[in-house]
Image 1 (cartoon, rainbow, N blue to C red):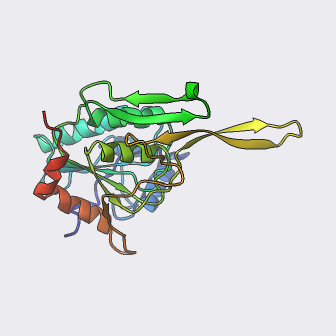
Image 2: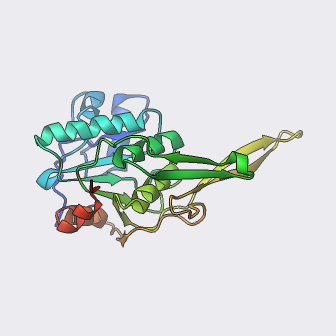
Image 3: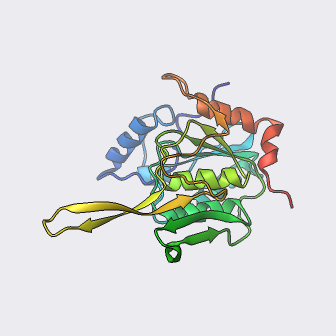
Length: 253
């Protein structure tokens, strides 16, 4: 089954930067072919404000290009817009983290916090015990009533892996796609006297299960490879959300 994407709609992506409106539109079209046509008209920022497409049967789709300042807030706004457009609660959400290189760990933690209501999100362990930090869910998440599928690939790294692993370990989402990059570390550059720099790994990210993400990556629950002319991962995510199996990711309580 092919995804029912209207090419006249724009997909909301956090983190795209360009010097002009036309540049943004061109960059967007090049990075996400099939989701937007390069010749659309109108103010790009206004179109971006339309947030994300509502797919078939009340399924929402959000792609995060990276984790920057306000990503979690803009995700909240995006899903609120989807709910309003649907006129009812979403039947499911596809969170696309493919080719997301990461970004701010704090924003990744806040994103996970919206989907779960308790438990460990991630621990950051340094070289000594006093450098260890654990981050827990702090509130009843805003997005507790619909199932979630997260799509990842080998371009998903760092903060995006933290999100995928946390939602997987908490059984809040089905992780679909291919194995992620495996960059779960904090690196510090120490300047040397000769002007060169030494890059040291000063801390590593650990999933709620205690497993290190660094150099390992996140293994999806369902492995799906894409083909050159077909987004099989997106289609599979839609199929999962249209099945009763996806209900298992909705928190009980």
